[in-house]
Image 1 (tube, rainbow over the protein chains, first blue to last red):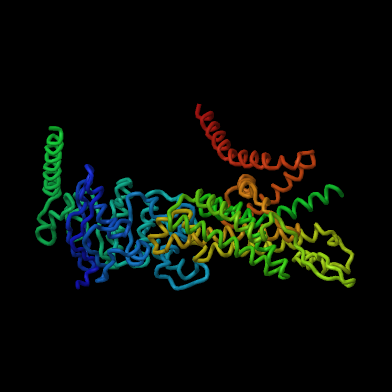
Image 2: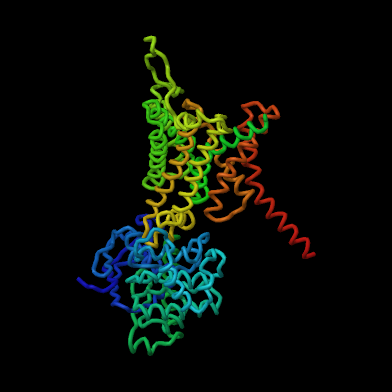
Length: 271
Length: 318
């Protein structure tokens, strides 16, 4: 058995099978991610990226195939159990935080996974650690630890969410377009923090993005999903040689082909 | 003196119902999930307490009452988390089922007095009042000659002590890891799950805690009035909610400790208002309509405040 942090074998998931709306979101997908690798994930809407993330996170369960985390079969494990070793960041900064609790409390809750037992959830030793982590972001958040999370800006909140996701040093980090809803300045800042944290802790990471520049410049491997299959897997020299324009072309060719295919199916049904 | 004794009576009532207000606060404001088990669990606390009090254990009876409420909360929480039944419906179902349970606990009667049969010195069988915490507390003052000879003042003092300890314990609890996890469950359940905490478990804990508090109120009331009655639970939820919303309107949204304190304060004020309404000849059956009106008004206040603020901003812009 492979001891890769993430190993996916023949993963298949369909929705509404046996009806006219039948959709095979993932079609016997295989994916091996070696330790510490940062992979960017591309794919049009409906290509299966989100389904892949939901299956890995345990929000959905597959029809066939297996998912291994550090060699352990987690295919049927409950979502909160596997969250001990993995974290996810979403596009919406509101999704990963408790708005009516303070920044410090949010971090303390996320840190529950690895924190030593203490009577009060917020304690001096952990807070000193959180302060140090926040100071490294260089966003002045270390002075706002008693501020309710809901009062922070989207960028601040997403940066804090990133800390929450990585504070317990997970084996796997999933990023689902986590900078897409931010203004360009904040997006750049959050992406920079992402790179730093992932590199420092050598966290195995999958990042969904629609930004061709990020897809090639961030991390060391780029994969493209189409109709639930892995259609492009770039790393090393091949990736270095790829340009955002050429990658976008790959993207659109497939989208056009699928669009044409969809039309022919529809007209066939009409006849 | 009439007003003084009315005030003492209103405040002691307010304190007796304060644990219930705290319970309603836990579900409505902390878990942010309406729980309609309240009407049933209040009476369950009352009947369980009555049974154990009559058996001769007044202090144990309060714990029994709270445990009964926790059990009712467990049922509601299991319906919510395991069967994915809508929280409102889950509460209604459990409260309806509890009616039969409560009837059974009272031995097939709809009310029971806290008394036991004994044989007096003359050899006749008589009914003797069962000891309650209030009776035992009252005995402490029997020799003295102070303001605390007044039974209402004694009830007030003892209930105040119980409520104060309870509120302080809750305030501490909500800053411990389990307590914070319960707060976070109400705030963002997904975030709790992704922090590798079983949110079903924290939700269950929260609903059990809330109903234990509600039932404790029922138990205290049972010992204070010396009887248990199945009808005592009617519209309990509306009263609890009235206390919580009054507290919120008057004291604002001041975090967890402030919230707990304002629920207790709301409970006191609510009883003062009700007592005052009785004073101006409101018939006893008027209390429910009055409670409903209070809740509606108190819920409307934040909206009206926002509208007025928005109106003023709009005005200044022109």
